[in-house]
Image 1: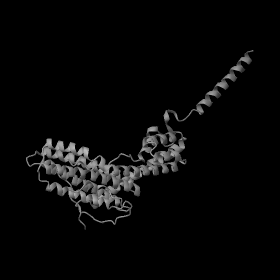
Image 2: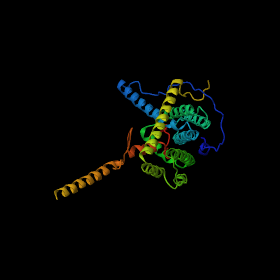
Image 3: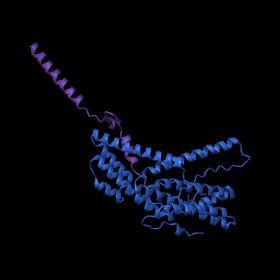
Image 4: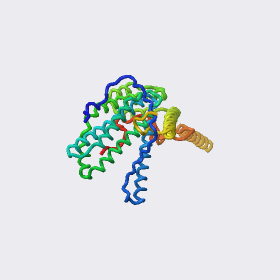
Length: 279
Length: 68
């Protein structure tokens, strides 16, 4: 069992060379039901899977909107790393418990190894590279698939009671181990939001640097910052309000369209499934 | 006498008309916290919504599913 400390992030400055992998398409569809199920039940599960896939896709589409800036890309990659590490830690805890109960955990360990390999690939992405969005989307899908397979394999081994017990145990586990990631992500998000405030000041034509500094230092929350900005906007004359509103709205729509096009592009050229394979 | 009364009434009418016209023309546009423009009104909520959209929530996380 790999120690938890080995999974905490390394302070690696500098770029990693891109592993320009083009994983081939694999169906991530895993509707494994028994042969005795009714057709209706299969259709219902398909509908649920389709809805989950839609939700996943919509979330991903929203997430990549900020990735045109390298700081935004860095944030998303760190968030993905954190999510994968959280699942790896839960997976390791689960396997440890099952081993103590003398279950055969070979398959689970293999699936967990896949997830760890995805983590390494995420860490290798250069946030400034042109293909960071494509790789993020592909690896997020791979991480999701690996997680799903692990869960299904686990559910095929255990009854509901044991599953519930394990769920309770792993829930308490991961709080402290991810503190570093949480802090690092929060700092970057704060920097990103500050950059957005700078831009907004540029559009408005006036700056309140003390407000910005207070936010950066953590003296005020994001909600308080938003409130103050809204107050400033409401005090402006109508023409300026309209100008600012229009610019913000146009940019939001532009980002949304760009993200949608990127996702459509990735779908047509093949998302990354089939981890570890090079063309 | 009648002419004097008529003159006063006429002057009063002019003053009242001028006052009403002044108030109507200088009525604040931003009633109900709305900003009127040639392209439509912008409510406070709409403005706040666009401002909110440019920021990332600090506690936001990416979801890839549960292991258990």
